[in-house]
Length: 352
Image 1 (cartoon, rainbow, N blue to C red):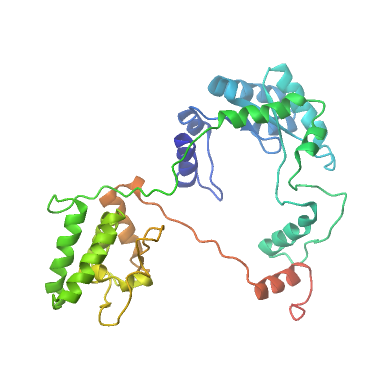
Image 2 (image 1 turned 45 degrees about the horizontal axis):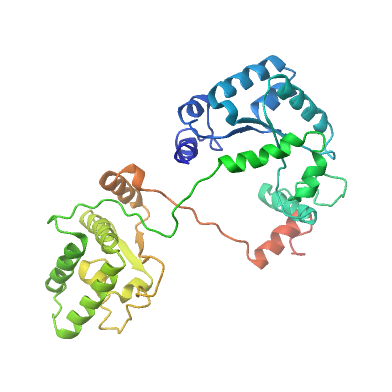
């Protein structure tokens, strides 16, 4: 699993060119305990045969076999509707038999049911911004839907070992990942105290910094919040967020905080938020409560022209391997979808 993660990460960070790429050197470096399958359509072995270079194909099989041993397979797919595809697969099978390379049955799946193909064609036309794309539906055209076990067995009756090998691969791929837990980076406290104590000290110091009266109501609220945070093991998270914002403020980078975290007195005293929740009667429980299974989520915004500075600081402070960026996937709303589909199907804009 760790080698697979390394391959994926490096293909994006070091091999990216329009798409993430993995070269032979990288495979050699991280091949341990991986199952390798050469694709039936776009694999280098399949391409070598397509170009009539069977010698190159044999060399590649030898290279992969030397590296992966019994964990190397040649993939075969069956698409009788695609012109010349089955003939190419026969070539691949013959070469696999000749070189004693195990074969595995596969099917490319782009949509669940055959009827979904038209939707995919339309989506591709929308993505390519091509109003002249032929968005139609012909039963005889390719089928990349999710096939049943019975259908797969029927397509591979002549090579049953290709089906059997799918189960062998499943049995090889046994990995138990612990989900639901949280792993936070190491954070060195200034005082050397445990996280809970450090957070408490910083929060109480915030009364003076904020010029806020340390009355019984405020103390009771703070103690309640600190207990919930400590019991759930999140003290280090608050210290890290506070550290990132402290760095931003020292550099003069504009920041703001969004969401339910405004209901936390702890974050106000730490300088994370700038709204006094007691003055505005904001509840802490909407942000974090003992019953909530999810981790607290403090949404931080940084000035977009200096955001990279904070990312660089986080990498430097906590280690490159502890910092990752995430993506957000947008969905098409009904109005935009109708307009885009109408355009993809060649209708005038007014029709949409």
